[in-house]
Image (cartoon, rainbow, N blue to C red):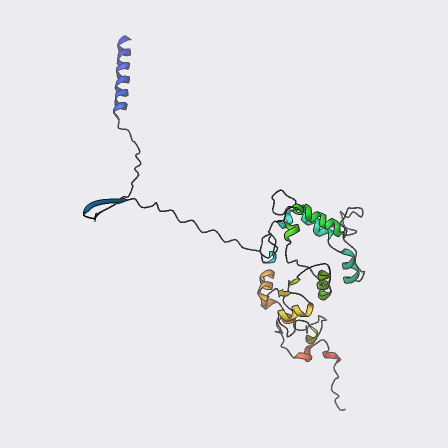
Length: 292
């Protein structure tokens, strides 16, 4: 037993010696400094000038371009637009709700043939609550909510912050379906204090009448017929006007022009344009009398 113990100790000692003698891998990091040496003679004396060039800074990566929303103006709270987070502030949403004149819309635009929808569900639909709380037109509460807003998120209410919405103001394009009351709506917006009114129409301009069953005005009665967008803007009293392009229409619907009739927009009638021969008054024209 004693011999076995001595043998075991000798084996372990040999193993440790081999491990100690094994070469170790050491990672050496060298810093190489580039030095420029120049020997010059100044006033009869030889002078050695050494210089170390300045470290080369890596060029910064170009910032990714941020797509701006054309409906938000400058996309900043600078008086010429709004940031994309503008309506995140609950007080901004409440201010807009209080400044909407429902009575004028119902009485003047819809000729008293409409009611304010107080909740999302309409009467008779599941979820409709006739007693639900709703907003009313109140310019004082509107101003109060604007002053409570904190659009720049600095913790200071806009009413006490000269760099926030109450003092800075804002400009934004609002899409609204006006039916055929564009001039009245523009006038209402200006009467309510809008400094500028810019119309954006979510369809191309209708410049041609329909010869296939849709009852509409004649070409001469259409505001966009033979007028440019700038001329139409002047006609309706807006500062600017822009329509959706035909390309935008077909991109939205996802089907080609060949399966649609767009004659009222383009004037290209599938059966050819025979002017009054295919108009809605075609059958009201006097018919030729054939002698018996």
